[in-house]
Length: 212
Length: 212
DNA sequence: TCTTGTGAAAACGTTCACAGCA
DNA sequence: TGCTGTGAACGTTTTCACAAGA
Image 1 (cartoon, rainbow over the protein chains, first blue to last red):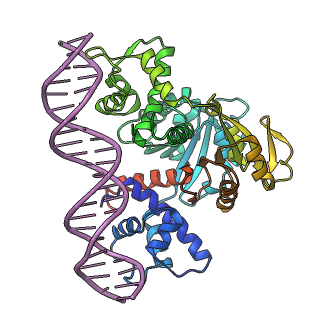
Image 2: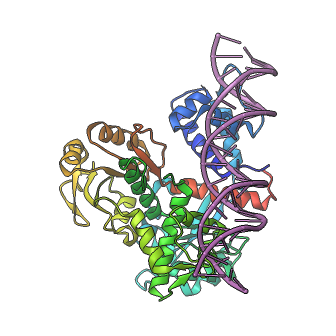
Image 3: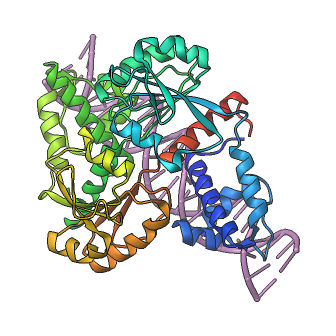
């Protein structure tokens, strides 16, 4: 079955919302309630959830626990993914210390940097290697996913080196630059600067009454 | 003129690419070259750029300098936006020290936190206030844009307080939670955890040959 | 000959409206 | 009666295909 990307994004939000429902002891929830809490239309919520068969009860709503378990099973990984982070600067270190970034779904097994002060040390309990050792370590540790938190200027080079020497399946790129990756590698970008530019652009547009 | 959001996002990427062209002394560039560098179809590039009139030369391509100036003028703000950051934890501090986050388009004029060790201090040269003073400071400083880097549990409350007491126009939310904002406020979310979940989901899907 | 600019077509995503069940 | 599930309608974004111009 094919599930569209915007749907997957909303599914993650539904799981989060259902966690809150569980904590507050709520047993049943309607598409309307879910939608109101997340700023999504109720019809959209129903369509998203209908992809997995009839999971709600007509006239009643969705059983919180059942829906939560169901959605979680969709996102359950076949194993704990092993991730390496390349570039341990301000942003990289912040992510390592970020609470929302802890999960049983993955484990960060190696860090890489070029700074001699970081190489050989443990940062947030994870060993930091020299980028030169990347190929060897990625293969030894069985890393399949990369988090890129290098400066923009270094990102493409480390990605080229990693993807050509290790069986990388996916990359989450925080470097503010577009990356070119082999066809078999899935790439997601988190570009803070672009999001801010878009926000400021649309604020300006609104002030001008829609004229550029 | 109306410009679609995906187009705006790509325009920012075109500007970045053109900066690289300028630095390397390249004078003319084709839609194909731009597309290849950014992983976008050439026809998409041409369509995006055609919204602003005939800016390229048929049979030749686009003049790098002219296109760069033109796109930049589209994103030029009417003034330097004043931004406040709410929540100065790991992620907030990382952003403050983030090089790609420096621009003449905006200035971060105030920080807010609840930690007594931070309140009253300067962090990266910017004064950190008590969240309790938020309403007063936002109005005095003329803040129109917020960056939310609080924990998820605090985000909705600070947003409610800020938007109800100061003329906030836009919010960039890094807290891993959906926010409900007044209709006149533009909201963009940067949700690191959701991006990682999506990536891992699609890696799993690919391994399973497309079956959930 | 080469590359842009652009209608028209296709693909994609959202919303509507109501039938179907509890 | 109330809320889900869903085909059909709608709106948006991407891609195609080719005319037009340097």
